[in-house]
Image 1 (tube, protein in one colour):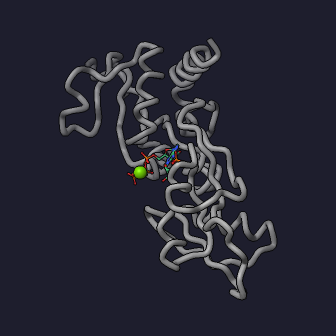
Image 2 (cartoon, rainbow, N blue to C red):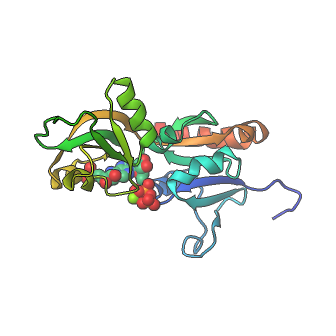
Image 3 (cartoon, rainbow, N blue to C red):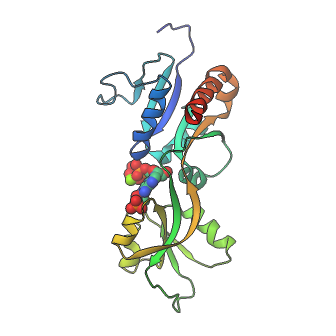
Amino acid sequence: MNPSLPRPLRIALSKGRILEQTLPLFKAIGIELLPGEQASRKLVLDTTRDDVQFIIIRATDVPTFVEYGAADLGVVGKDVLVEYGGESFYEPLDLQISRCRLMVATPKGYQPGLTARPRVATKYVNIARDYFARQGVQVEVVKLYGSMELAPLVGLADFIVDLVETGNTLRANGLEATETVLEVSSRLIVNKAAMKMRHQQVTEMITQLRDHLEA
Ligand code: PRT
Ligand code: MG
């Protein structure tokens, strides 16, 4: 690579289920991981375009990398973005992948008991606090990092706030969704400085992705 050129455009991708749907999107606009990159232990991965690199990280870390400019662009779920909060990046594109809903769920037939302040278990503590506050409902929010569905079954919480796609996980655990808190899909986010300093490269990428999605 020519050392006089600026570093490649760096795109932070969320690991896991979002990644499976993100790679085909980039492939469709001519950007693929070079063979062997994903299997290697490298964290900065080269692509078929020598002016573009991917970093593949935990979904919850994507906003941080993009806010601080360690990545110029990122792909991340709207759930993670809203929970992260703030307005520290641009969100120019709904990629329409990894769709689901963030929902309130309770055990089937749950009757609000005498508990003055029901407990809500969730990974999304900021969203949940804000949601119930806006409804004027007093709740105690308990932070969990996984297996939210378990909480009501073992008396840890009265409700959960969690992602629902098919509803199978809720059903399998005797829970039912009662309210939608947020419609979720994955978004393209852009570092604010990169939007200025790498304007042509960034807007070209947004346009290509948008054209592909609209086709
Ligand atoms: O696993 P790790 O802790 O590393 O990260 P993660 O769990 O955040 O990553 P991952 O790969 O699970 O991806 C999470 C992101 O994918 C979320 O931030 C959403 O934007 C998106 N997404 C879309 C989903 C789902 N659909 C989804 N259904 N993330 C999780 N689920 C889970 C949900 O939590 C529940 O346990 O799937 C289960 C429900 O699915 P159904 O089909 O049974 O309703
Ligand atoms: Mg997971």
